[in-house]
Every structure is written in C-alpha cells, then in structure tokens.
Image (spheres, rainbow, N blue to C red):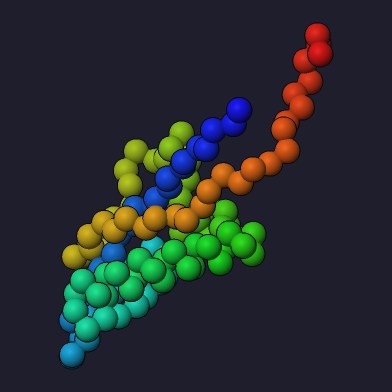
Length: 114
C-alpha cells in the first residue's frame, strides 16, 4: 500500500525593501524580480509571490536550471570558499516552491536476478 509523501522545498534568497514615496518597493536583485506594497510587510509578501510565480514559470518553460546558473547558483560540492556579497540592507526571504511529487509509473531497475 502506497503512502503519501509530503515534500517541502524552499529557496532562501536575499531581498531588499525600501520606502519610495508612499510605497515600499521590494526586490530580489539576485533573480531580478521586483514588487511593491503599501506597507513593508505587503511589499515583502508580494515579492515572495512574484518569486514563486517567476520560478514556476521558469520550471514550466524548462529554463529553471539556466536561470539559477546565470544567477550564480551552484551545487554545494562546487561552491567557492567565499560566497558572493549580499546587497546592502538585504534580508533573507523564504520562497516556498509549490512542487509535489506526482504519482508516476513504477521504475523498473535492471537487476541481474530479475
């Protein structure tokens, strides 16, 4: 009997929120995604939503790997000793990635005694 497997993924990226006039402008310079809101919290929330939509769009178009590599993402085993500088005033934001493991056909691994 199969059990449901819950998987939770998130991406933590630096974000900057600044007040511009009556609005707060939020941005993730790393991925070149921007948003705004009437309050600092709303601007941050809207940025997270924009990042989710951007990443989903990249995934659906098959460009997520390329976008992440262009932004400087590398597997931990390949990571340089010193990380890239974080923009001044940046704070980490957690971006939930809304992916689930879909049911798929059973994999048939080749075994000599099968």
